Image (tube, helix red, strand yellow):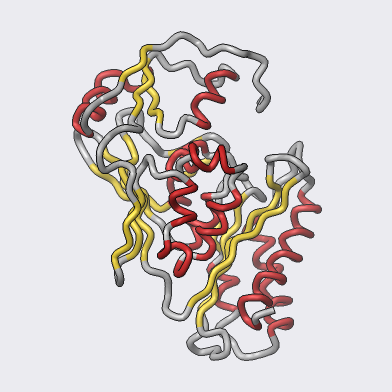
Length: 294
């Protein structure tokens, strides 16, 4: 699989700019696999240049009213539209205050030019393991709303991503929103990543902790991406941190569970052994910061 385009041009296609969600759904129902949605266009244009996809119809949804939205409802959570950019997400006050890992992820995408264009929905649909949206959304139990003329589905991000560049998005569906529940009370979250001296990250970690000083009430969440083909939560390891004991001992107990569940892969960017090493180091670092403020 090549991620460097040998082409300077795009394959021929018909450009369509619908005026409503209903029109989008009718177009997708009619054209199916021959059509692709253009939101930010970062992934789609790159894939078309690389001839990984060659749609007959490109459906541009950027200008649709209500698609470019981000709203927080206290007690319910966030709703993010399909054309909301990473810059808009990172700048939104409730994201800064309550969804630290998502703020970190949106802020770390590429550079400012890319963040001004890239959308969170597009980042997910690209389904590349190192994309920044995956671990942070998995951490917060985010759900995607997938709509067609015939039905509407809700899928968690880890259900939606099936493999590298593989999703459960059907040819007649469009993602109309990302729903992110309110995080636990008194919680803090962090997202970190390690890159291979390029745009390709080799270990992404999202971590959330609430009530760190009270084991019976303590809640820990851990989500990983880039280390395996799909994003992964590790609830079995999260349960370890509900017990009393030194943080170092709890981490020693949890790390083998994490490594077994994540099953770090070997690819052109890093070996399984190196990813395992990074996951161990980064998990300990973010949990120490969240648990002890260090």
